Image 1: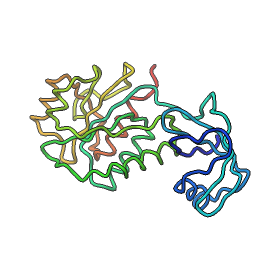
Image 2 (image 1 turned 120 degrees about the horizontal axis):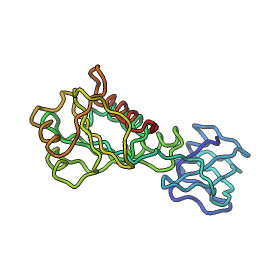
Image 3 (image 1 turned 60 degrees about the horizontal axis):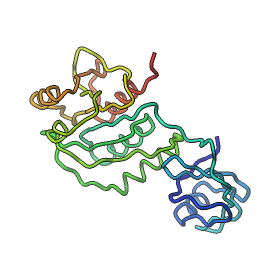
Image 4 (image 1 turned 120 degrees about the vertical axis):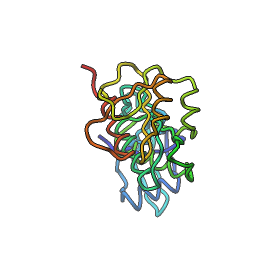
Length: 231
């Protein structure tokens, strides 16, 4: 598969100079050369093929062809939203990166009794998502939704198939519908009151196995279980 790089908006057919940021990445980081073939994607499902013509420091000139009729990028089989209490910075990046690769469509930061609102660098989060999509050949960029409290999450209209990760007797398995919502607690776990609130709001308690997982690991493990192929 050709290497895919993010460019939004996509350049029109013909000769085009890429943005300085992408030009620097292709010219200095990837060390592309004239004649190399690349695919540019916009994170909304559209792709164009391009051939590199010239590389000048931070500027790269490409010859763009027509949009690709059968894009190389792929999408998860269902729309999975994960609401979770984000861990600290580096681990939050890990969560977003690997959650994207696992197939999460929407990340929703969650405020709980054992977490406080953290600094939100959404521009940085967007870069993490873009890099992860490039790595795993995803067609559509995931989104990071607005931060909500647990009570607001429970009160809002939600997807019919929804789960909360707990130490329940029943383990989480593959999703049964095209949309699913998984809630994962903070490092210290949900309080009993919070679990009761979620269950009363229609979230089915499910286990992720016998071991105690970090928040970011639980997100990836839960996503992998829900997105597994239907039997």
